[in-house]
Image (cartoon, rainbow, N blue to C red):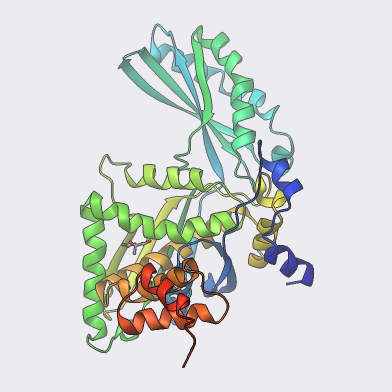
Length: 401
Ligand code: MEV
């Protein structure tokens, strides 16, 4: 990393002028820690992974998990072509089947019209590639034909490209069907744009002081099945996965709300909210995990290049495509899930968390510099991790003795 980049990150990444270019009514900036997760080997390549997150332990847990997966060759990942779905809501139609047939007959014209808006994306090999039709009869506002425009957005997240194309083709759709278009907007359930990651952790590497590796493997698999069967657990399990994925999404200037929406809608795709990961054991007794989720991420457009810290995050990854970024994020999600399940299925997570919590209390109580760690350690040693105690220690001039 160059000196200028180090300075940019230390200064919070975004100048006041840049903040004002991004959104409206800006009165300041709000910083979060920018960290680096280590030990990631993905498809035989090593990565340093930028993560932006305020929650303690996430980056450390992720790096530790990646180290265990690395012992067996790291993560293997995959991804679909970057195809986004845009929706057009057609109403006031006499017959949904007739309207669909009319649109199918003119599909080539509709795609050509959509591509007239595709600009640089088409020059890079992307653009509109197809239509899909969904019938929703008997709604409170009548029968509905939902047309999906499938649009290859290449290295962009693609929201602007697809929304422009949808607005552009809507009048043609009305002319073809005689119906009325209401909404024209992308779907955040971007399940044509899936990313997957899988990996193996040796049972031997999971041994603890009190449990053999095989027992820990069993406990992690049991935890995984719990999330697959129970939506109350799945919500927390998936939240842990998103701790990792969101941190990468933020560090690269991508839209984490879009990714969150897509992940949770996908987790509920069968009408039963479930886990985004699956864990099992092989014949040798080692632990296998895999993750699959929609990941609409870009490496061009949006804040990816406008935010100086995001630019640094992307450079650090050294990736060449939006698909590669999605695959890295999927691997981070799997690593994060593994780390959480391992901790939960062995010691519980509170021991590590309380250490970080003690540091946060020391900071909140006004500790500065080296005093932070000293006060935090004292709170832990006393088993009294409370803000009042931290304040009392500082007021008493607490120093190392
Ligand atoms: C905390 O941010 C995330 C966990 O609750 C995830 C999980 O329970 O799997 C530890």
